[in-house]
Image 1 (cartoon, rainbow, N blue to C red):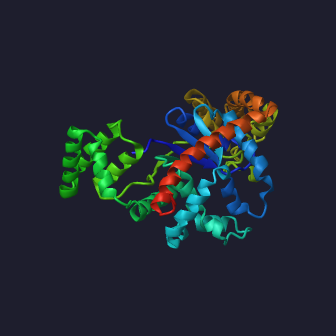
Image 2 (tube, rainbow, N blue to C red):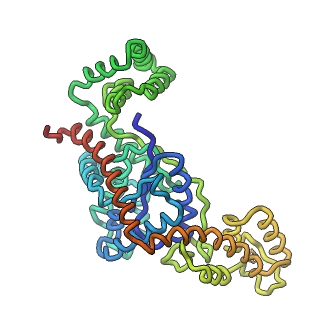
Image 3 (spheres, rainbow, N blue to C red):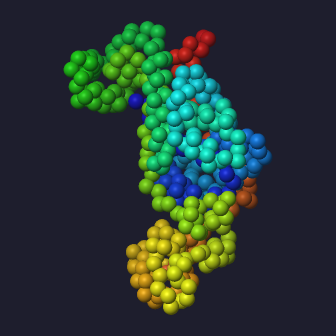
Length: 400
Ligand code: SF4
């Protein structure tokens, strides 16, 4: 199998807010130390909905990259790059589009949803219909095994899997595959080759999943095989096709959701957001003026945390003892709302201190961010080119 790899992207929306941090970035920071990760700025995706106003894309990209670094995304652990700097994404998108049924794209749930939500824009475009396919290319080009997503994105991953499967089915039949696979079997060494053949027969004739599992584990351990021979043998096990593209898995994130200051979804456009690198005084002011349970008109009125957006912040930021203090104090009118908000203010400021520190060096010297991204683009491009070599060859476009 190809090595485990995580791919995730974000549209360049400019300065990020704490909703992005708790919803995605915190998870990226955790993942980068567990698996090889590629994180990219999805600038082409921004054009699918904002093709008529691309003026902000470039500045938003750099601003967002500084936020990623501020949040703790570490370029020595993860690869950071810009989608349009790796044009192979577009090539794979085009090639995949040849064989992707239109119906697959039309039935993606977010297609209609987004068209309705963004009713002020004309989204009856070819680019917008194709954006889930571009997403598929973004992931499949790195043969990513895992993609961190929320529940709403699972159908997209399902579609990516179908696209990869269809591609392998249509184009995985390489010329002389059987002979090349037999050659690869020999490279396993006589003992393992014999076992491989036995397990393959058991799976193909009796459908033994156990035999399939054993054979796959053996191939994973076979150090002397080249990547392409390994893939041939994986394909040969289950049939007679090479697995050129990998079917990714959805990595469901257990991200905590931080709502906006008014309890709705946090969004810059709703005016209810706290920026990732918000100034301390602004954080204090924003939280102090947050709406609370409308029943607490006077200090002496008891309240209900479940009806108060501040409570949602305590769920993200406070420990059990503080939460108990809030619940008890709110219901009995033992504490005032400003008193209740203070631990949240303190926790946000504490959380943001290292972010401000990390961001400062990049603000002082923007060439550092450029250099990180240039390295990331080079690395991503090499990986993408590896896949594209196989894709072109499989589709009869290698012209050697
Ligand atoms: S005491 Fe806290 S939880 Fe209760 S209404 Fe006021 S801010 Fe909300």
